Image (cartoon, rainbow, N blue to C red; front, side, top):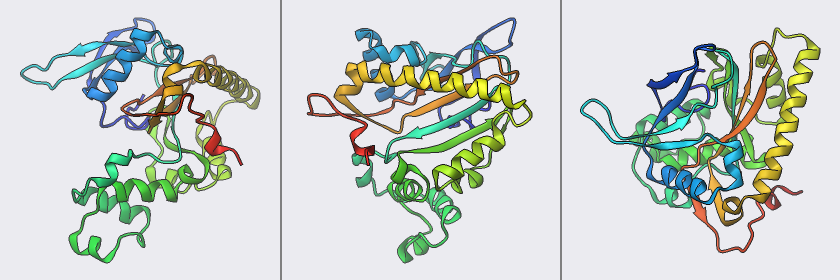
Length: 268
């Protein structure tokens, strides 16, 4: 898998894959850059044996830093069991991708200003143009509004057609459900026979039903607002296996509500 296509270019350490499966050549574990919040969430889920563990990577511990590498933590590789170069899709969940605390971060970011200009040349303010920079919040909020996130509660954040990622510029053009469906159809198993593709779609729908049940039963999900999490869709190239996993749990905010209804804000 191309880690950047699945939205993990800043997280998964590409040269630190361990325990390769002798049949598939796929690593059994991955190392991810250390994030204290994400590690805390994984540890809490593991200690409480939360139902979410059924649909997530297994947390395998923390690796302390060495002379040539920084602190990391170890996860089971969700692609283990798939033949090499499966089709992968990363769907970001929620109506926003930023924490409320990130709104107050006023650090100017020239790199995000360039991305904002690429996304929507009319978006930068006069002050941002003078500085040649914008805040992280400005970038994330504009991306949420421009794509399907703010209106529909999801966006296609990364798609890899085997080894080649779909360009971000193409994904940014998916501004409706129909746009997104057409993009998936173009890139997911484009050479497979129609009946094989339908079998994979049916397998993914069954998996989604299971995930809804798991999340409904999860005490963690009932007690927390999870921001920026994704669903990772994986389909084998020969159409013999398909699955979906919950990933990216670095942003979490506890809620005072006795039982949070994550679906209520999406009801029309």
